Length: 189
Image 1 (tube, rainbow, N blue to C red):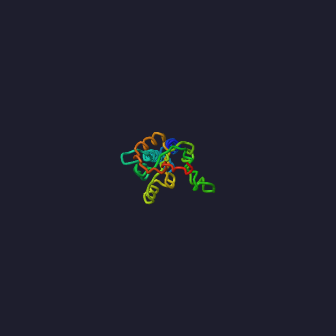
Image 2: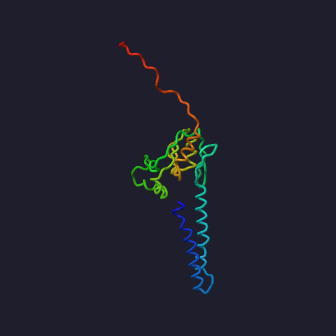
Image 3: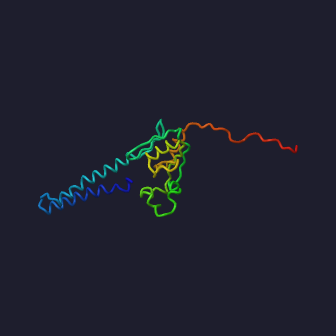
């Protein structure tokens, strides 16, 4: 999002400077409503650029001692390692191939423009094992774009490194042997 929007604050500030000077020069350096409007473009550009930088700084995923911390603009959530079943790296497009986006007029509406650009790039998929209350809490914090059923999809710059880091911290799972018992003897011998 930062790369797509980083030119707009500069254009706002540039237009504010150029047109306010032009308006002031044409009015013999008298400040009126027209020049004040163009002067207002400069702080608007600064505010918009600051908001983009803040948004860029608040959206991240990091590995901590407590678990995988996923943060977005307004909230963050820590997913404990005991709640993570598996991690894998796949194209982000796989997250949108489920039943909620197949066909119909609402298909494109569910995808934000920033997500459309990232669909072909690899993303980190974290499959969770938690009860319904915990899954509802995580979904409420992350939203429907990142979370569906029991999987969190995270578009990251280097999803392979993050998948390796998370997988290395998962607790060893000891499960019961579901097969491989002794064979019964055949009757004909």
